Length: 434
Figure 1 (cartoon, helix red, strand yellow):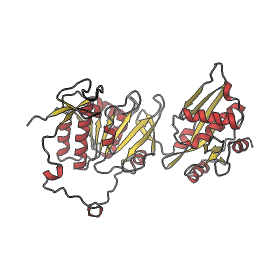
Figure 2: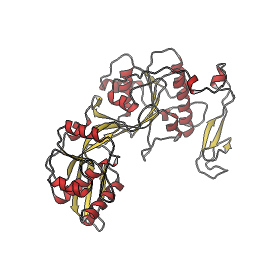
Figure 3: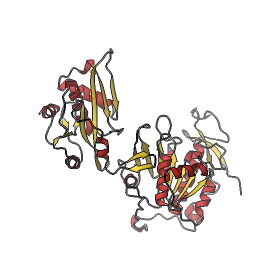
Figure 4: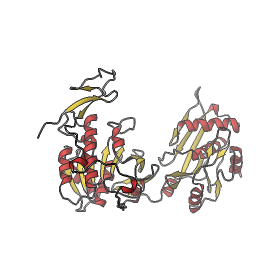
């Protein structure tokens, strides 16, 4: 077998070098030279098959509708856009110990596939599988880190319906000299797995590590190469886990799946609203229920606020589960439009249950929770709010209002403070006191 040629190419300016250098001699960028395989032939995949490279019109492309394969985990199907499709490449990332391997092992059991581990031995995997109660015979295991040997396993006739690679940072190819986890190794191994998945029509899940900043470790191009990017989030010492999609070529990018981590693995939560409200204390100032949207599903969560006299020269603003800048904006609106002297008070806001709210529809809930705590005002247990708060104190409309109201009424909430009925924060506060 002829030796594969490699070069070190700068990721900033494209300069080439026969060996690795700490600094690019052309642009001066540090640590930008990445080992890359140099193709030895100009023949593409189609030409090797004897086909001509002729551009086709959209009407000429042959395509048969694909039926999505259900995974047996409704929350996972939701974030994927309805289920698995042939050739799907999914990158699953999350902090260490959050439950990525556990979730992938359960998924592989339900679908029936191959679980490739480069981090655990087969004996260690068996111990974890027995703890999770996995006993089905449709699940195969492989302990290997050479991506070319793994691809040879796919090439043989087998009954795999999906493949899990745990993790992409442990794979290597002998065509490159870098160690496992190096930028060149991660990119080349992922590229070979992508080609094999598309060729065989085999769904492949790549488990990825994250950096201390929370981003996927390795080159950013890894996220561009895959079809779907999923993040498993949650409080490390809590039981709830959120599977959030940030990229999806075959579905929505704002869907969220909710799971609970137990001693038997991940358990699907079909009604997140009841779970997030199960430990709510009623009749306590500073607590209010907000109707949020996670993708196409309404989720009711509790927002808690605590306003106390500060002992510091500069009062503190602490936000957990919401954007810090939105909290600062809300406090400024309350001080200006309602005349609340918040400049001498510490303000703490928390979303109960560990959920993080990104949409501005929670602004009104945050504002009213702060007002309730400041005035020591207990709220009606059947009250629910949602709406975006503007700088002028106006309550702005949000999307999918009818779905939010329908979910609130289904769970027994009768008093709804929303942009449909109230146009300003002053009107909302007045309604809150009634």
